[in-house]
Length: 114
Image (tube, rainbow, N blue to C red; front, side, top):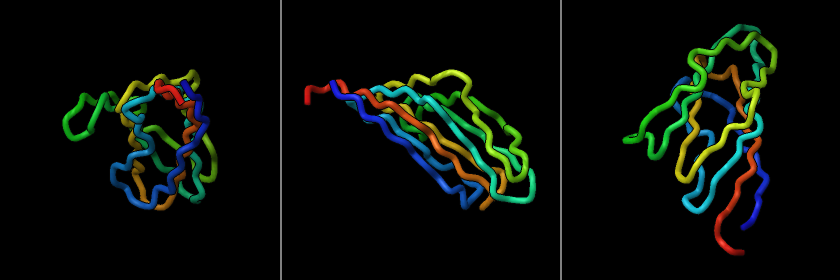
């Protein structure tokens, strides 16, 4: 088993659903941090969803629904680690294009021998 420390970052330049992270099929993951920051002078919101597989056909679990983000601030959304299983998908949707950045800090645990 190999532990892989990584981050996944997005500049949310649109207000459409965007995949932030997908767990590989041979791994599990612990999302330690989900930081959202605003570089805009206007307040906005973000929605964060977890899917237990391909978002086109999997079950959706909303983690944060229309979560307010104050102008020119950063917010740590997770207060506890989020465990993700094989093929699960974390998606974010900004209410307004070009105002938010999202960064997830992740420990990916690969279950194959290296």
